[in-house]
Length: 199
Image (cartoon, rainbow, N blue to C red; front, side, top):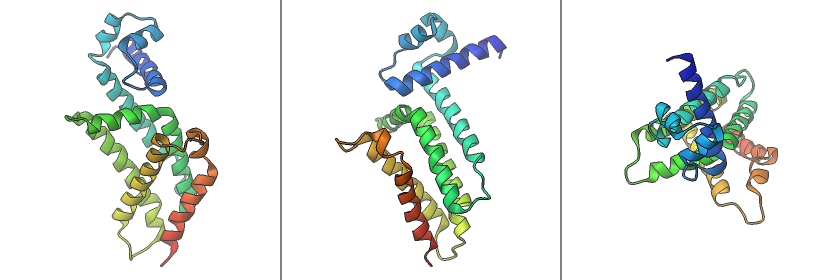
């Protein structure tokens, strides 16, 4: 791929990600993307056939970014500190891609979910589960627990908690101010640590 073409594709992906994150995927039209970039619709369709195709590229980049962020967490720390860094990484990703994640969920729940969307979602989930298993749960050195089950349970529980708080927040609360605090994470970390420390 020529450098110029590659650069233009990257710019479309980057602009689309910003607009998807602010307005949501469904509320962002191709026209919004081209207007933000000051290019024609024809130029957009030279690089991408559909808006969905751009979404897949955005999610691929998000996956690579998440994978790199997890790899940068210091694995020599104790499991509680690793867990805290894991949550911080998740929050950064959530704030950057939150509305896009909602789109992924809607597409997964549609009558005919796209196989690419299913693949991307499972890759994200499996990446988190493997990280939790190898860098947190196994560090407790418990022979009496099912490591795979516990790792999966932690991932599903954390994801479910974030989803509940972001989709169904208390009326008096501001989501961004209430679920992304150190106090909340300390409670979750303490619960997980207490549960896994008891023998």
